Every structure is written in structure tokens, then in C-alpha cells.
Length: 325
Image 1 (cartoon, rainbow, N blue to C red):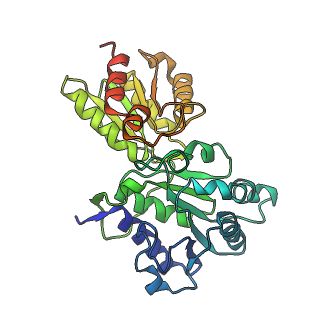
Image 2: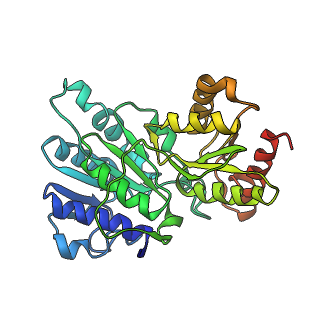
């Protein structure tokens, strides 16, 4: 099977859906003439023209609102934020308009829109450009929140998101755009809300999503050297969450470690830990451990970044702790 980059998988998903449905368009900063800040939309302006690949000013609130209005009137916009850090400027449109419109209108107006772009830390980008907002958006009813970890999932989930009749938050990572993975040439879709058991195991369940799946798999490899068999689960979406897959895994392994980049308070891992212990308490042989970023603004210095972000040392120690080793 061919291997393509994460950015190419996203581009294929958008292009295929735009060829399939003339109501789909892409709008955001530098998506057209510059081919995208991360070259995700490279070549799309040449194929689809300036009516469907639209450059915007640096005005997230404005073009997010235009997208919501367009979706209410029969189109399927893809709104690209150069980073989800900038989506804070537009969060009123995402939360108070897109997420609530179907309910507020008594079902008269749907908002089939995708808000996509990178999330989380990407190196030395400092406090205002390194934040995770998956848990912020997942807190809001009316939204679906997708965080793919590889090119295959990125393409299949984005195609599904574009066809979805509800607003979807689609979160990527700057440090993953160049990652390569196997992606079939034939069309495929991946349903939102179905987790993926990436690796089976018997001793402990490791759960993560997005780019930290790399750390989850590294952790499983490292503990395997000591004879520990880890089952690794990729959530793929954090609203809805596939609790059934998590519960079934814990019933087998009796232990769980959750790895997430967001701050610890009110994080996705908080909800996972609560729901797993509520639904599978009798199967747990140890308290669930969460690995999050430290509860401080994300620093700039590499040494401080290493101390603040989830890392292999912390995750391996967590696995051993739940196994009382």
C-alpha cells in the first residue's frame, strides 16, 4: 500500500469531498495563494478556484461566523484555523452559534461545518501558541471533536466529518503533518466515536489520542522489555468517546494509564478515569493513573518543556505503578 504524509491525507480528504459535493468549500488564513500555512491545501486553489478556496484576513471571529451562516444556508464549509490557539478569538461563533443552533432553532437550522487546524505543543512556540483545547470543545454539547493520530485515520475521519450534519472540531498537530503512513487509494470512511485498539495486551491498558499516541506506543515498547504486555487504545474522537471499548479492555487488563497533553484539571483523562471506575470498578486492581502536562503555562525553554510535557519516563513509571512494580 502507498505511504503518504499526514498533510497529504487531509488534502485528499478535502479534495475528494469537494469533487463529490459542490457545496463544500475551504476558508481560512493563507489556505489559497500560499497553499496553506502547513501546505495542507497545496494545489487546491488551482483545482477548485477562488470561489471555493478562500483566503481570509486575520479575523477568526469574522470568518468563523461567515462559515456558520453559510452552513445554515445549505453549504458545508471547512474552516481552517492556523492554530486552535487562535480559535479563542472565534469561540463565541463555535460555541454559541454552531454548537447550539440546531437546538435553538427547534431543528430548523443545522450547521454542517468542520473547524480544523493544529492543536497542542509543537516545540518552542511558548505559552500562547502551545495549548490544548480538545477538552474545552468536548465540554460543549452540539459539537463532535476528532483528534486523529495518523494519516489513515486523518483521511477517513475528515471525510466523515465533512459529510456529518453536525459541527465537527477536527484537531491535528503541526509536528505530525510530515508523518507518513499507509493510506489506500480507494475511498473509505471511519465513523466518529469508534476507538481503535492499536495493540492488544493483557497486563495494562494505555489510552491516548492524537500525536501522543506515539508516546503511548513507545511506552508499550519500553515496558515490553520487562515482560509487561500493554494494550494500547487510540480514542480517535473525544466527543463522542467510545467507552465500551475502554471498559472491555479494562475487564481484561484490570489496569489503566491515560496519556494526554492537556492540563490535568477538567481534562479528557479526568472524564475517562471517572467513567471507567464508575462502570468497571470491580475489575480495577489499581487506581487509574493520568499523565498530563504540568499545571503551568507552557514554557519556551527546551529543558522546561521536557519537564512540563508528558514524556516516556513519566509514562513508564505510571505503568509500573499500576502494576505495583
